[in-house]
Structure formats: C-alpha cells, structure tokens
Image (cartoon, rainbow over all chains, first blue to last red; front, side, top):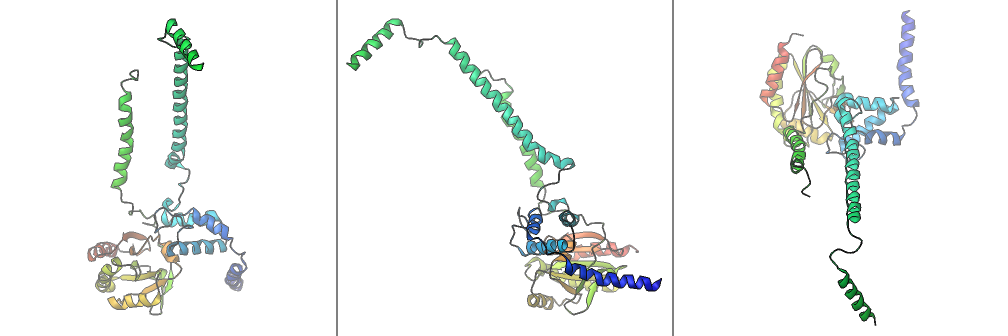
Length: 158
Length: 179
C-alpha cells in the first residue's frame, strides 16, 4: 500500500514538469486577447495589452504562464478577477446592476430616435398645412400689380 | 413657439439635475481607493529567496502575525518615508510574535541592496522577479502593506507609506488575537 502510494507520488512528481514541458506553445494572439480585456493596474484607462509599463509586461507574462499550464482564457481572467475584483475587467460583466451600463446607451439612442421622428413629423405636417391654407397666388399682390410686373419684365427682355 | 407648454422651459435645467448628482457622487469618491477583494481571505502562499540567501515561505509562518510590505528602490518618496518606520516596527514586535517580510518588486539587484543597506533593514527581504506574488496579493503599486493574522488570512491592506501609528494599530490588534 505504502509502496503504491510512493510510486504514484513519484509519477506525479515526475509527470508534472514533463507535462509542463510537453505543453503546446502558447498562442500569442490568445495572450493579447486576454490582456486586452484586463485593466492595467498602474495606468489610467489602458489595457494590459496596450500598456508599455513593466507591471503590464509582468501581467502578460503571468497570462502566458497560466495558459501554458493549461488554464482556459476564462480561468485566466477569473484568476485576475479573484485578486483584483471585477474592477480589473475593462468591460463590466453583463449581470445584475451592470446591465444598466449595457442597456442605458441603447435605450437613450432609441428614445432619441423616437423624439427625432416625432419632431420631423410635426415639422412636415406643419409645412403641409401651411401650404394647404395659403392661397395659390403669392399673398399681398393684387391682380393689377401682377400685370404690371409681367409687363415690366417683358419690357426688360426686349 | 409660444405653443410650447409651460413645463418645457424647465426641461433643460431639470435634465441637468441627474448629471449634477452623478458628478457630486463621483467627485466625492477617491479613484485611488479601490477595495481589495482579498480582505478576510487566506493570503496566497509564496516561497521566495531572500537577499541574504535563505528562503522564506509564508506557509511556514502560520501561527504568527505577518506584515508583508511591497517596495521598490525607485519608489520615491513613499518607500523611503516608510522604511524607518518598518524597521522600528520590526524591532518593537519581533520578539512578540511578529514576522515582517519585505518584497521587492520590479527592481534591479544593486539599487535594491543599496536601499536595504541605506536603512539598515534587518527583517527578511525577498525579490518577486516575475511579479507573481504581487498579482497574488492584488498589488496596484508600491508601497502597499498587508497585515496577515495568525490563521494566515489577509486582514488589512494599507496603500501608501505606513507610519508607526498604522503599524502599531494593526499589529497590536492582530497580536492580541490568540490564534
């Protein structure tokens, strides 16, 4: 029993570094993709992918290391959230109160479109009504004046 | 134009009210004051090689109160301000069950050693070359100091230079707890 445990233990001890060595090389695009979703902790509004700081560099190293150890991108992100809280994520996750951030801009846009449509309809209706109500001829010109304008225009042409 | 209802002339000033409320809230919070999710949780284990040679492992310090201080030689002036207070705290409490550990981050060997020599630090200091321990502790910047109780849980986090008073308050509280 004890020997079996010992064999198992040494297999584990030997197998672990071997598994790490044999792991597939880490996809740099995947590292960048995860880094782009994480907030650089020493910067103002920069992602870990965009920051040239040493801290961000080390964080990219940790992402690479965790992926190499077999973590999924979700697990890597969860690790950083575990240490820094949701603050570390550049996009707030779509849950609970955070939904407000995702919904309000689109709701505002929709509301704005409704208001614009309403105003445009009112404007067009008003100008249509104005046209319908106005006499066909220009207002304020009597027949005698019109004839005189026409006569004088005709003289100008000759 | 005169056909607009009376309330309309209040619409624009009223629309500014929520914006002003939001700003009033935003300006009263400190953007640097980010609560750590680690308070009350077990501190992440670490095992690092100290500048003097021997390894130091957090797990072997279970049962004692541990102060973990993250610093760098380029962190001026805060790390330089707190350094004498750290050494004083270590001298005061080392025989009463406290262990102080300095963790040097993003630094070069030579300036880091010069810093330790300048302040005559006698408590163990170790390097965190890849930043793993820093991220495990959710460190934003230096200096940051963590107070770990006898059960190995992070109990307080102090951002910025520690003072004698800050050290005394937290260490006294944690030492008073019989683990």
